[in-house]
Length: 301
Image 1 (cartoon, one colour):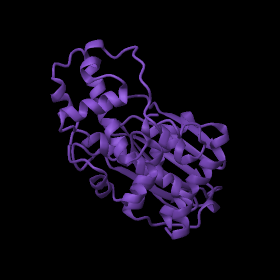
Image 2: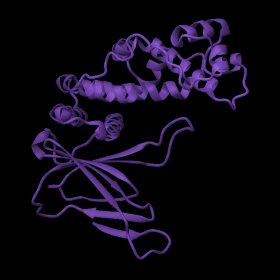
Image 3: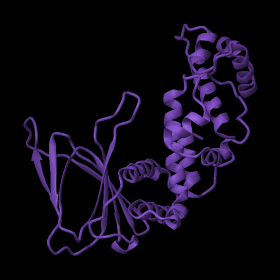
């Protein structure tokens, strides 16, 4: 690998790499300064033939509400190729025989974005990964890559758990972005993220359903605003700004969720007050499947 300075002046190059071993998979996080360009080439006669999947943010997004698009690259160390990059990236290394794919694989744009989202989500969860979960995570990650490289009904079924985890995070990201939009609904969410209504309902079933999750997300937002002593908005303004069109209905839902009215919450402050959790919200805790491991983290449970 060659390191080239792209801007400014410096006499040192500082970088950090952290690697996790997940059964036969290696997952690497590489932090490099954006002032340097990295260029590497695969050898003519390599000693290894691992698959390498790298992901990094492109820094560009389609709108102010959308996250930066991620660039994903899949290559095999046995195939001659060259690549350039700058800044931080994450990388996945798998044995050659882990997936059945051509030496120079092609992947559809949608599948590449889906796989990139999954690897970013996996990276965020590695710090919480238990040793007992490692074999299941390795298997699911391999299934996810296989489904992205050569999709089939069988491979998509095998990759259902990580696919559901990505759908979950995409849905939550959309909910958080559109939480103040009164027109946000399960139907509009399905259209936005491109999934069927039945699948979205099944994924959020253990959280009380998608409608319940949207409602609770909105209530939690108003709870934070009511607890903020510097917030001078009226309760009705806070409710409307969080997607509630009827102040009376909002007040009833708030009291049913947290045990006191919005007015009482604002008057008493929130710190130190104990409130019961919503039914079904904690039911998925402690389950060791990849889907629930990632879903717990995504839902903030």
